Image (cartoon, rainbow, N blue to C red):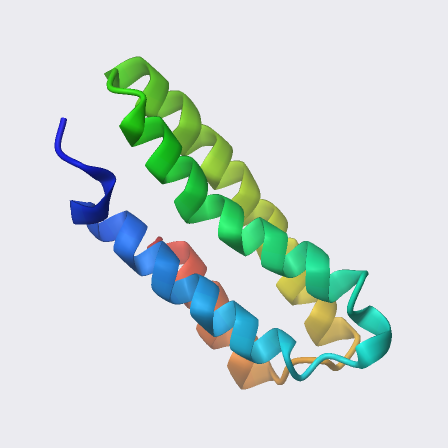
Length: 104
């Protein structure tokens, strides 16, 4: 198997993590150990699990870790929708981020 860094999905997920960090910088400081932390951890988990699965060297393990990454992506989408309900994100930001998540 080729390295994970060549995978477009890993590259896009890494870019997405950067976007998530930028938008969560605007969350209230009272959320630093709450929604900010949870959102960032879920975002980081997506490319990390793709990389770990690919690095395991078997198709079966790769598929298993992609499944874990998809779970983290669902968690992340939920955090983003909650942030919108709390008015930490605009409709535009939320739509953009959810669209990016769907592309990944």
